[in-house]
Amino acid sequence: MRWVRCIAVMAVMAAGGFALSADERPASLVPWKVIEPGENVDAPLVLYWVPASPDAMRRSPLLTSDELTRYSSRCVAMRVVRLDDAERLQALRVEGELPLALLVDGTGRVIATVEGERGTLSVTEVEELVREELETRMASAEMLLDEARRRVRDRDVAAAEELYREVWDARCLCPRQGKVAQKALRRLAKK
Image 1 (tube, helix red, strand yellow):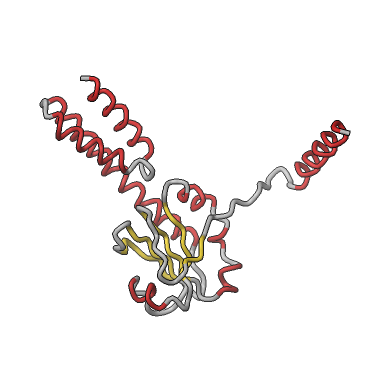
Image 2 (cartoon, helix red, strand yellow; image 1 turned 135 degrees about the horizontal axis):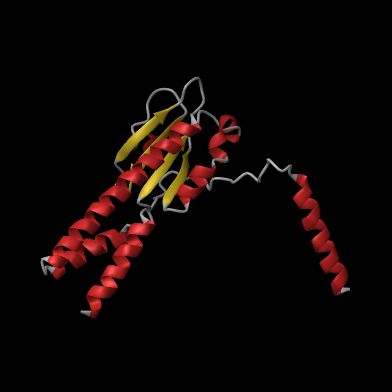
């Protein structure tokens, strides 16, 4: 009986492999979460999406963006703001036509926005918005690493540790730089 189940599972898997053509690949779903009024978001970066309507949201390419899915794994929270959440819309200073996407830092400061045109948001512009902010953060982390190395050379270990810890704390947004900071902190701890 066990082998029958194994054969059935393998048959289903094989059939699934033929369901997509060679050029197709499964769509990735961006982990958007509809945020409730008054709910707090604890993340270093939050991408808020204010759709024009629930129906427009269901048809948006923002739901299946591979790039946004990757960014969500780097601590960029993806949140949909409900149209009846007047308090949050006011806090984000949402005015005018919808849809709208806003990138907000951990303190609630709006970094940048993408406005819709003729009722739709450009997924390319939204991806670019997040990409540019992540690149800016990585460049800042690199500068902190360079400064920390200079402090180590100048034998100011306490200041260097503080800079490395700052980069380490941002490791989710800047994973490569975070690993470098972690290794440097371990080396300094051995001295």
